[in-house]
Image 1 (cartoon, rainbow, N blue to C red):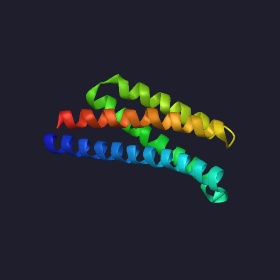
Image 2 (cartoon, one colour):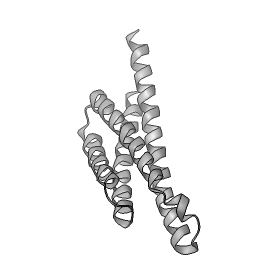
Image 3 (cartoon, one colour):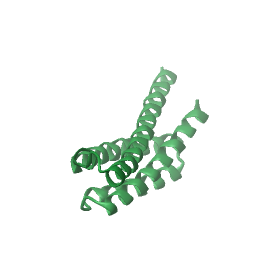
Length: 130
């Protein structure tokens, strides 16, 4: 019974970390592609650079990141993902309240990078524990 519960929790945490890595990657691709398309080609600025897209994405990433960081620390005890992820979440939270523009993009990409590192490190611990 305890083994089944442990396996289920590891599976859920692994999936959340994978979703976090996916969200981080999509966010980085969105930011970079938006800048190239809008600045280079003048296409899609009203849709690609809409503040609502960034706000929703950041809130989702912060929520998933917070849950997986706490679950990871509780399971494997390695503080590195927690510290890197917390720094990433802090940068992303600041980006939420920064005016839409270059500063927001830099804060978001830096935060997403830290959070993605934390998710990957948590996933490595999950595979070592399995």
